[in-house]
Each structure stands twice: as C-alpha cells, then as structure tokens.
Length: 210
Image (cartoon, rainbow, N blue to C red; front, side, top):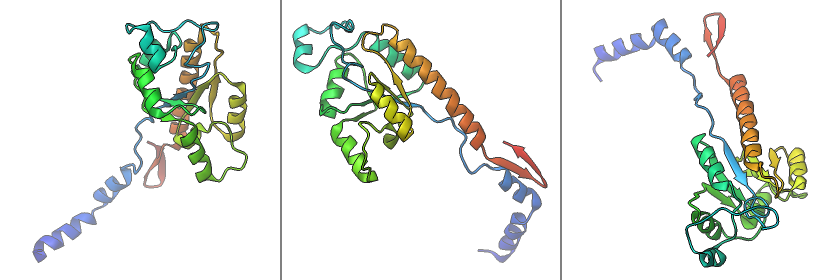
C-alpha cells in the first residue's frame, strides 16, 4: 500500500466524527420477530363429527378417507389470516403421524405448514435437554411462541415449563377468533419485550433510546 495513502487512511479513522458514527450504528437488528404458532391435531385440527363440521373439499370423499382425516371447519380461513399477519404456522402433535402424512393431509385442503413436530422429534428434543420430568409437548424447544391445543393439561405444562398455550374446545364454534385473540396478545407482549431490549445510543455523556 502507498505510504502516503496509508497515512491519510489512518488520520481518517481517528476523526471524532467517524468514531461517533460508529457508536451510533446499532449492533443488533431491530427488525420485528416473526411469530411462530403451532397447532395440535387430535380434537384441535382433526375434528370428530359430533364436535364440529368439517372443511368442505372439492376432492372426492374417498380420497380424504384414504389420505387424511376430517379437517375442522374454519381452519383454512384461520391459516390464511395468520399468513396475512406474517405468522409462521407449524403442527405439533404427540402422535406418531409422520411429517409427510401431516403435510399431505393439509395440502389436500390447500394448507402449507412451515414445520412439523411429531412424537419422534419431540422425544429427540427432550433427550437433548436431559429432561427427566418430560412434558407431553415443549414448543419452546422449537422457538414456537404460541401453541394451540384442546388439552388443559398441556396448558398447565406450559405454566411449569414457560411456554404459551391457548386452549380451544373441540366443540367451540368461535375457536378461530379465540386463536386470533391469543395471537394478538402475544404480538403485543413481543413488541413490549423488543422495546425493552432495544439497544441504547450513547452520545457524549448523554444516553438516548434508539
């Protein structure tokens, strides 16, 4: 490198204005975190005729009997709204259904999910954390912010293990609105937490919130 150019570069990096500018650049991105929500299957998404109507389908009934189960009415519009709100949608089941089966079942109804946790993946997560008193579900292990389930037992586990659960009854016709209400509450909580964690900018002897 040319010695004269190197000397000029050294003087530039010592300028107070440049050092001040470096101090003003936040090291952590302030971009809002995307909310991740998961759904149980049995008596939550997969419905029984005595509890809830099923989503209508253009496909013949025998295809659904062969490849899937009745999907709870209101699921498609709910997932569509969650996507509109930029939520990441997962399925979390304690059953042995394979991820391929779950994805295919939902795709029959035009629904795509970003992730699937079944009993096998759940057990791997518990083993990796060395949990002796294992909960039936552990959404926090998969960065899931809110889990939707029909079981109050899972909600109690959430209180003990620090994950959020909204309980919806199998026969609740307003279940989608209940889920959206819980999502809005979590979004407010996350926004407040992000505001608290926002890095501060130091200018001289004064401290400002960025």
